[in-house]
Amino acid sequence: MNRPDNTLKDLGIQPFDLARHLDSEATIAEYLSQVLASGDHNELIDAIGHVARAKGMSEIARASGLGRESLYKALSPGAKPRFDTVVRVLKALGVELKISV
Image (cartoon, rainbow, N blue to C red; front, side, top):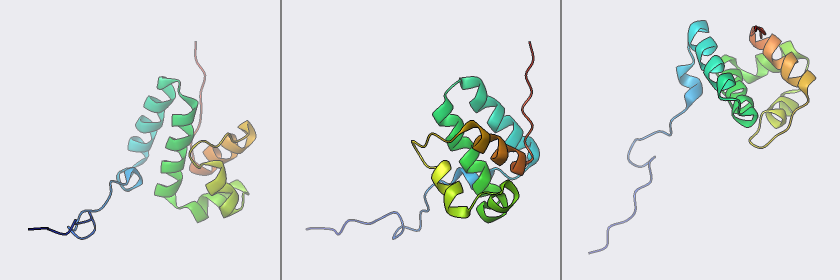
């Protein structure tokens, strides 16, 4: 007896979306701090993208002075955004980077 394959959607299961769980400034700060501590720049760009989605890509695009499409492109997997773009997005997110020794 062949049973049709069920997709996750058919089963009522939604894919995990990290952005939905970044619901407070403290959570966002801890998340970005942990990713930054890992030292993986690709993971950091992904994390910034998750936070931007959590806060609203349109709002972050406007606040950073980037076009919405440019923001999506800069934060897409494998992207290598310029440092000034990353700084503009972090500022739009309300994130402050600090260096200490």
